[in-house]
Length: 126
Image 1 (cartoon, helix red, strand yellow):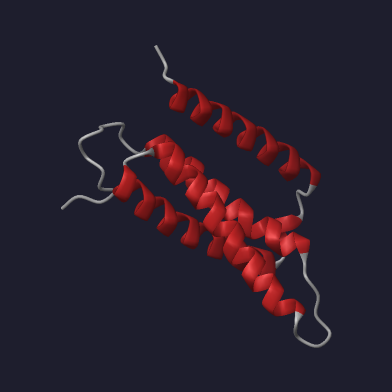
Image 2 (cartoon, rainbow, N blue to C red; image 1 turned 60 degrees about the vertical axis):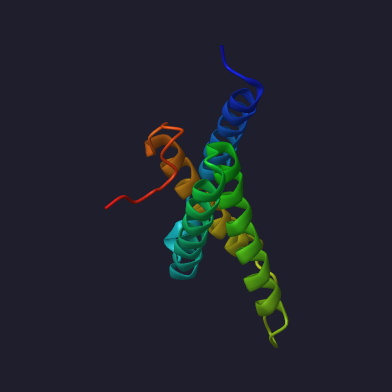
């Protein structure tokens, strides 16, 4: 039987994946711009770091998944807020979306491919 935390985790994955597909089809041209690609990579890096840190501390994939998305969104908001304070620049929602996509994509990737062992919380083993 699936416990409550796993149900919430599956629901979040389903909702985020559905949202990702809908937004991707609506803005298919988003990642063709070089600036948006850089934002995507930044979201992937910070989301991956957050996922790894949270997963190693808690051993919880749902918490790590949400942490990856949250970290990417926070980094995106901070960057766009800084950009909006520059003369002639504004807060670009599409840059924020690209950064969030990076966190979402690494969160889904790590969530799917990490082993499910409860005793081993380390992402990288030597």
